[in-house]
Length: 245
Length: 332
Image 1 (spheres, one colour):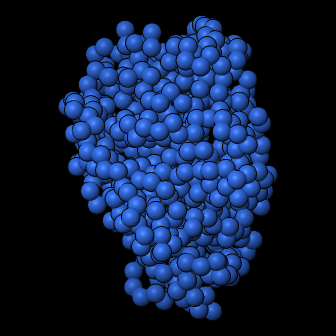
Image 2 (cartoon, rainbow over the protein chains, first blue to last red; image 1 turned 120 degrees about the horizontal axis):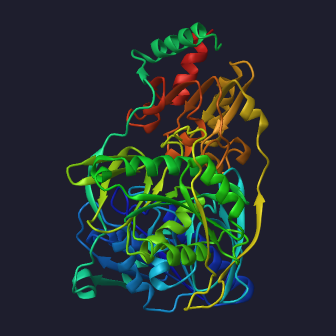
Image 3 (spheres, rainbow over the protein chains, first blue to last red; image 1 turned 90 degrees about the vertical axis):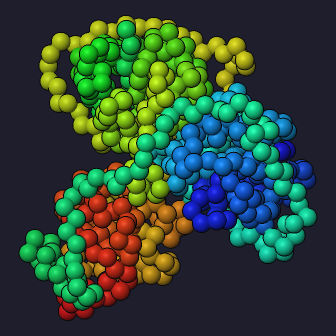
């Protein structure tokens, strides 16, 4: 079985989007179990789109146990349309017939949650988002999963592989990267692909980024000032006044 | 004529209330300055295996024309049936805007539908306004600390998923019901021919936490609590208030520090206590959706930039554990 995990660098250099870490852990967990219980050979590859320094997250993924890495090197402005990212990732996803493609439910910076389902549409694959549980696939062409709905509800789905799943936090506890694997990283190959080679014509974004602003306040937000004990006393007084204590 | 299309949210054969918010947002878009000159028509699409009753109800409640999209194969929602059938229907309708709920269901099918229609796709919209070039949309980004403002590239339809609780229902009562038109589209994709996603069952992990729903005071803990053992301090704090219940934000539940029945937010409980004390909760939109109806909100957070402070009556910038200790000392 071949699994591809799409990961993204967010925040500090070398930091993997936390939902993608859960996706990678889920892939590695499936690999561990499939090889231990069913003696199946499983490979877990990772792919990322990002600036040159984003190769650090691939090394981190190797430290967790990933087998191969693909890096589509881009020099993007701050906003990238999900459609553009999905189109780029589709190039890697088409290289090998992957049985399963995983990614985080969203990135913590863009918070769009669209790359996974758009990648599925481009590849013509079925997709489930907000996956909170996977069962061990008994064959290379079927997986049972649970996806999270509102108010504690879950849908249990049986999905034909190949498929794309986006992974919700809470599905697993990610392992820490192993130092010896991190040190052995230099031997492993990261396939770097450049944007210009892959796409002679630039991919047209479907949204235009205008800017960032502070979200609106919905309440007065009175700030208590002074030392810690001043603040504590003020709160005590306020709650007393409102008859809440 | 251009069309604003609303996809009603149907769950377990019922109309989800966010459908009324989507209808209100559609009216807002229709009446917005950039579109007022040539206002588009609005249609609400109701996908179901037997959509007649649901469609009539929605047409009556909203006064908007409804298309009941009859999909014989649709026993329970799956993304592939929705994407295929909605694409077949909407691509012939010349849509300018397609409005979908930003819920587990909407987020699951909206991106695929957008690609099928070569549309722009803007998820999690929490504001709609216009500038000199037309309508622009805001949506949360960077862990809810910022809103990002975007617009679709020109002449493309746009698929918008709308955050629940933002676009208030317009409280329309009575009036002429919209017309209902039933159209049948079978799920028959050329590529695979059959369903690749089979819905097995819908289950509920735990029942609703009645204690949390009824509590007058809720003391809720979030990621600002650094270790599981530090939760004790929050429990002590809660004991100070008569009949207080303990709540938590999602990350603590994900880490198994506290049970799911304590989770407050979109995927947990929705609460409305008299007093809500958020201890080390950053304030993701997913959490805010669960506690925005609290009467009085106090937030304690070390980070002065924490989004929760924008949605609090009282803001206390402090380490949670240190503050709790100071509070217990101050109160004697």
